[in-house]
Amino acid sequence: MRKVDLCLSSEGTEVILATSSDEKHPPENIIDGNPETFWTTTGMFPQEFIICFHKRVRIERLVIQSCFVRTLQIEKSTSKEPDSFEQWIERDLVHTEGQLQNEEIMDPLRIREAHIIIEHLENNKGVGRLNITHHFITLS
Image (cartoon, rainbow, N blue to C red; front, top):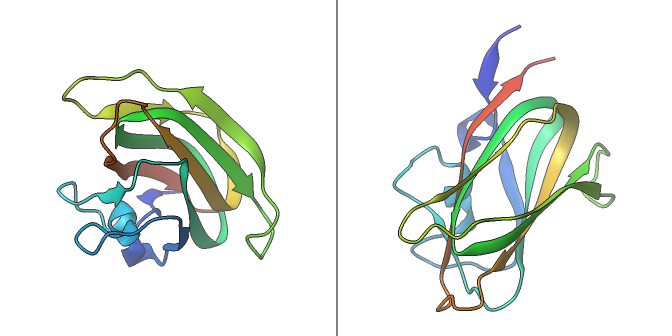
């Protein structure tokens, strides 16, 4: 077995749904592998996106980097169509003034899609950042 970051567009992963988009910081930045890019959201309502791997993968470790996120919720799906999700993780994140929030999840499972929902801090002025990095996934 080898470990590889499958949560990259270069590996065929796609963002198939996002509830907000900005011309300069689109949702595709989440999976472009560039630590200098990010997805900007409106921050007004809970924002969500769905990442599709197009095959069943085993996640060993997931690290989500964000700014101004109060609550993180992740739902998982193993079906061929992204229409059936079940709760996987829900966490309140600690606000880190001027620094990225790094949330590490170590709960191995097999999935095809991840539905991620973020709720911003109330004092947020309407901009949130989210990068997903270091998804070490074992190929089956």
